[in-house]
Length: 447
Image 1 (cartoon, rainbow, N blue to C red):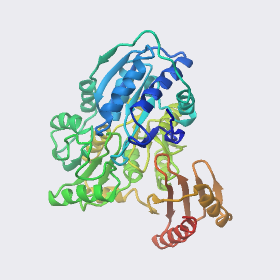
Image 2 (image 1 turned 90 degrees about the vertical axis):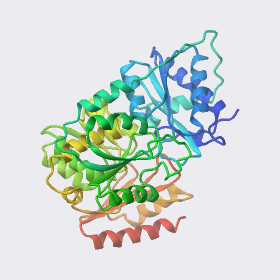
Image 3 (image 1 turned 90 degrees about the horizontal axis):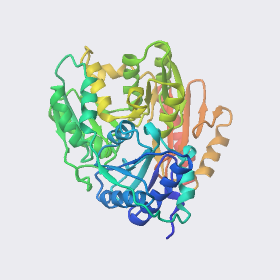
Image 4 (image 1 turned 135 degrees about the horizontal axis):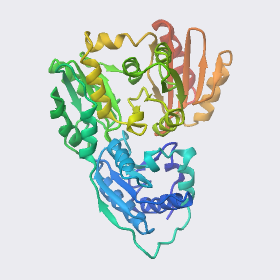
């Protein structure tokens, strides 16, 4: 059996089911994960969970069988959200874990997110290459079988979320769970918060019949935004299919970037001396807010495993990605859409402005968001851009960043999809639009 090595991405395993990732591939990768842990001399059970995708039960079972056939015990947490999976690994003091999920990718995809002890992320540079190497070899089955124990840490997780709520008034908002795995958890949490919540698509359905599982897809934003307007809600949130990412829309149903909402969080959370991890595709104003609060902005490469690693290394209190990931030190440096929501409700309940006006304070510059391009030769496209903008200050920390006095841009390869991503920001809208069009023309020459 051949495993396509390209399914091992920057921060996880992802591929199309069943062409690239199916039960035999997953069984073999499970054995490789055990071999990786044993090479590191890490003992203890392995937590295995899954999202709501139609293929996830089959792949979940295959992964468990691959682990127990290597003589390791499994804590089976069933269908769950990725944040609850992280909590389960940390609370159970396990050797690590595997979450069967392709996060926000379309329904034909599936994949695996790996973590080590205390839910520490495993990315390309911290173990995925080793797991891939083990998966390419024959790993003989052990003579003794591991045991499978069903576990459920949801009550403890919900108690933790409730304990973080400090909400001063009743707020009317829309919450769209995207037919993913976080809906059942949200349905237990919301009554305790005593909000006027308008739930959308809380039922788990791997066909994702109402909109794509990606909360940043225009269709997802349109559906949630229309519900906000129809119900005269103060704002709306969209949670992605595995429950780790949260996207906000204002009272007019318009998307608000995660780094703008992140600026509001920083203003409410950060204390002098705190470190906050951010990414290069964020607005430059976010670093300015952190510094104004007496904190320190720490840059990480895009990708949640990278965010977690940087947060742990620097003991950062908070981490933000424009795509909607928000990570918290108190939750083992992991991300959680529902913890983000609880904190946002607490902070916003003290604000005396509308959602849109509150967020406007954190949007100083003009920013395109990430623009995606299908490019056959990404390396050649980036070199063309590098040569064209040689007179700017260039940095290659995460893709190619080029900075000028009044504007800057970032071009980087996606960690999860075959795309090239462009971000442009400028001090005026006119300059931003001019440079966006200019860069788009360069990139499209290479398509």
